[in-house]
Image (cartoon, rainbow, N blue to C red; front, side):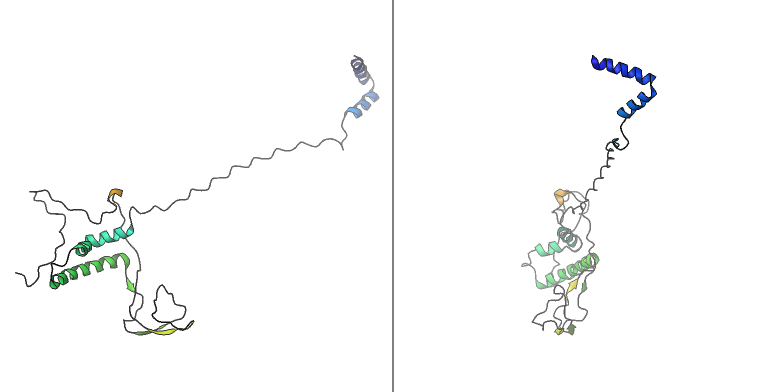
Length: 208
């Protein structure tokens, strides 16, 4: 109650006496030096980092490229038919006649897909200089050359290397991924031609 009466009296004297109002103002107003500074400024929100792009995996081929190559050799050169055919019942002349065609057609397939060429340009039996620091994956040297020096060598085999690799793309189903050559069937009594010819060695010239 006492403080309330004091506040009312102070309010009245502040209204009527300027010097008292100035003193009260000094008492209740904060000094410039002690005036509190602005509060902590809000930290601007950092925009969320964009997620790293998902790593795109290279799609795996639908089947092994080795099977694709084998299927190509079978389709264009009847290679598997020849390898899987028992040869005991055939003469050397029959086998030789069949191999000629298979050899030609297989060579066409390998040249089209791989563009094969010999590693050594010189012919077999030639003497050539092998420089020091040669790549052991390209040249297999028989014998022990002097360490760190070039050596004269004789070409035993020219070697082979591919200049490209253009295998056909597999577009079949996963269930047929292991098929090398489809089975060929013909409806009984139908006049439609067969899809292909089964492998058969030619008759021997001595057979009638």
